Image (cartoon, rainbow, N blue to C red; front, side, top):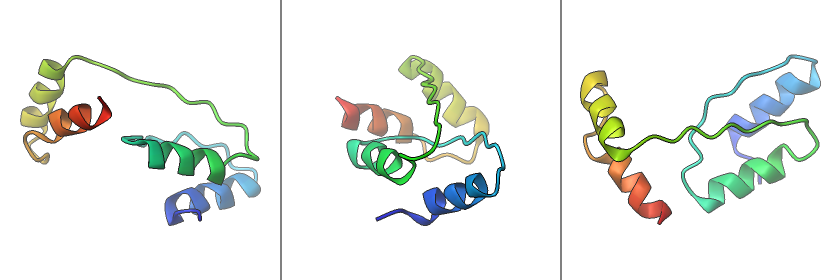
Length: 78
């Protein structure tokens, strides 16, 4: 089943709107859901990777992130 976010993207695409979407694909379920939800659309994925120390620096600098969240996501991917 499509999530609302992917469904909204599909609605915009159906009306001819070209989109750039910034979203974290943090696990296999999310990746598979995106692939299924948008399988009929031209999609280009771009991966952005950086070392843990940089992620931790960004968490602190932003001030609106839960400290340790980035490490938790990286640990879950291993």
